[in-house]
Amino acid sequence: MNRMPHNIAELREFYFGEYAPLYDYLNARLERIPQELHFEASAALDHLMRIGKLESGFSFGGEDEAVAKAAGHLKRATFDAFKLLHKKVVRKTALRLCASRYADVDNGAFVPRVQELWHQSIRIAEKARGLERGGFSDDPDRWDAAFVEWRKLRDVLDKLETMEQSPAARRARRRHARHVALYVLGMILSAVISFFVGKGLNAFFER
Picture 1: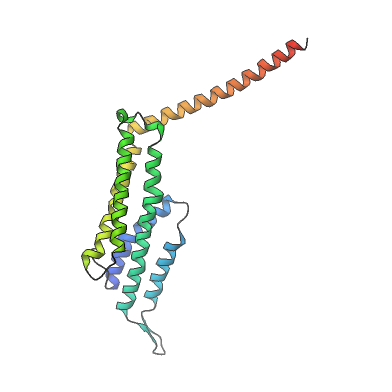
Picture 2 (picture 1 turned 90 degrees about the vertical axis):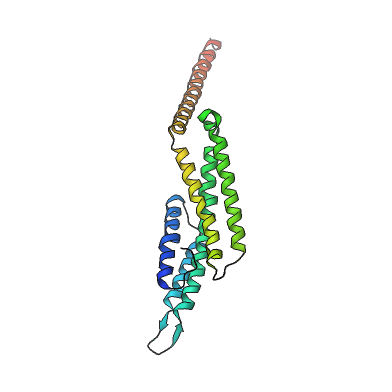
């Protein structure tokens, strides 16, 4: 999609090609989808349902007007979804990969690479938001420019998720899990030993 939809076919292409996949991805990753996204999609559908006339002859309006208004709602919903992707998915993934357990992965290069990708995502979001604030017209470049930027977040997220599933990162998680298990076991043994030593001392001094 490289321009604002002007008919039902283009709007359908935008919905299934841009908004729906992003919404489905967020729905699978987040515990809760903000109501704003649902409101915008519902408003878009409401405009489309108003196309045509009643049997009484009353007209709700033409297709062009309804499509333009529906496209505006879906545009806002898609931009909001990209913002959620950045804040709730990319950010949390980056924070998770900056944990101390990954400090030695790839000879110490893992965490700086994660941080570099996170800062890259910030620059993408800032530029996309700036393009949004610039408004839109029938100019295809102005409609598509913000989407071009927001889509780059997917590449950043793909790289982060690939890093998270790398053999080195998996080894680091297993090593961390072993350390945690040994620490917990040590705490339990220490508590047990202290208990029996205490009982022994009490018995000794009570003689």
